[in-house]
Image (cartoon, rainbow, N blue to C red; front, side, top):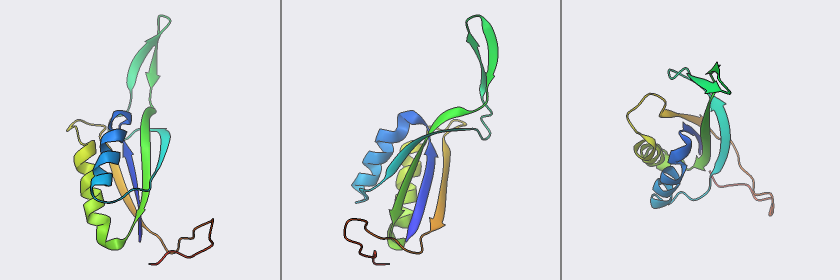
Length: 110
């Protein structure tokens, strides 16, 4: 199993959720995060004063998928989240050693 972490634009969450649903991936965690990569931030004005916004609002989607669905899930995320502009985000894949259902205590099948 793999943990897929995707950092995307806030306005793309619904599109990514829908794309994952179409490939039979239902479970996910969505978190509001802040950060920057190549985008680096921008200058904003508040009450007449300029200031630098260096940490931009993003959304992090996490989902655990079986190995055979990993590539399908990654392509669904990338296709749904892409605008073609700097700041579209990143996708990271991590191995998952074990998973347990809290309610039943059962170990997930790997």
